[in-house]
Image (cartoon, rainbow, N blue to C red):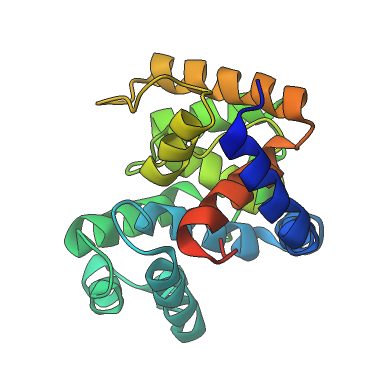
Length: 217
């Protein structure tokens, strides 16, 4: 149902809709035009984002990639690049373990090829959550959105949830997000987006913009 807050948000959406669409095109191009390493970098980025600023996480990944440490470094060699994100020791280990999962016996990256074998975006997300250390439903959804698969997924961080309360999609901020509750809220948002005729991936960037005044990753 459209409330007063929705109409305020809708006006902002109309003013930034083109920017949102352009950013979504950028995300889709990572998968269409990128290679295994490009997709790997997006996955690695989302491992760094929990409780850290997205721009800092991307800066760390960019520097790791430029130095090739992301692709060849040990935990100890990765760690100095992560001094701008929280829980840097844990995340350095997570990045190192991720590389073991996303390379073959020849040391070649297989990220894009591997995820291409799944039959649905939901199947991809379940595998990520169950098998990649440091990835919850939020981070897995974030990664999939950033490579162009965000049409039916929600990235439920506190900023998005706060706005869902104001839009009356949910009644109150949840104290914790179990997998079951995450999917329930995601379903409510999916239905709401259909009702107000704003694509789900557009809505995510819109609600993020309301908080950050920016459209980033």
